[in-house]
Length: 100
Image (cartoon, rainbow, N blue to C red; front, side, top):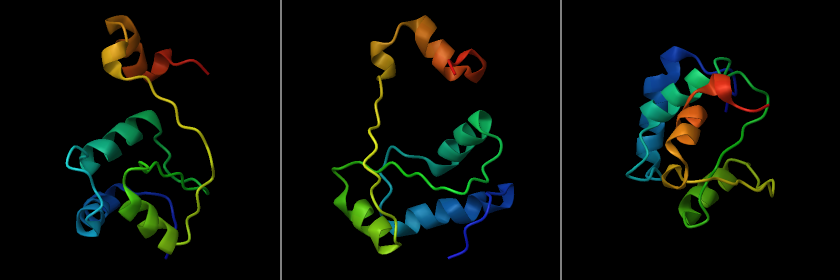
C-alpha cells in the first residue's frame, strides 16, 4: 500500500474503492465527503490517517484492522445540526468562524 497526499485525480478511484468495499453506508456520498474535506483542509497530505467508523459497522472495523489500522481509543463527539440554533449551524459550516 502506498500512502501519499491526496490529489484531485484520485477522487474517482477513492470513490470506486469505497463502493467496491461494500462498507459504505447508503447515506454517505464519498464525492461530497471529499469535497467537504477539501473545503475545510486544502492540504490533504498528512502523515497520519484518521478514520471514523461506527461501532455498529463491525465489517468496516474488521476491514481496516486487516489493513493494519488499529483503534486509537479517541473520543469523537458531535452535536447534530438539528440540535443547533440556525446561527450556530451556519457558523459551523463557515470554517472562517470556527474556534481554534
